[in-house]
Image (cartoon, rainbow, N blue to C red; front, side):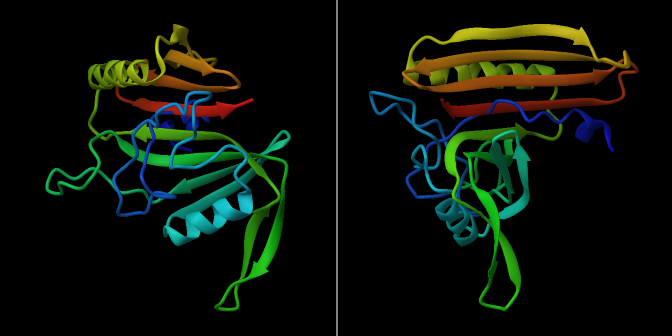
Length: 222
């Protein structure tokens, strides 16, 4: 296990809004969706309680990669990668930081096996309802200052969309093994039974030669 993978959190996430049903591999990363007036909508033009069967089909159609389906308590977490990377030479590419992975959380459901057109047996999550979307952003070469500036920009963007948020965490503490320090900064916006949380997470080895950063944004419905 690498230093980065050891500290990669299944944390709260970072932006979304799009004009299509689901983000394709060659489509720029999404921006935060506006509120519909009554609640905070999930990203990618999705709807709360979206059936997992339909989500699986959208992911496949977008030619993205499901790398894991994992049971987490009463929920299923489906991890998706393959989003378009930032590219200064491509005007249609998303701006940094890079959207590394998206985790879709479904309440209920079970794994089923279907036969694909090529005859292969593929797994699908059936019968689940979408209750959370987590976007995780990382950018190679960025230091804590760059992430901090980006956090401030995204916080301002979310405040323009959803109003004043509340700070839910700001802490720096040693890791349990004492070999590194970890910093966690987070803000939250609520609207009825929905919420979005913006989180910065950093772990730095005491030797100074290894560090891990991530920005994340979680859209949730209770």
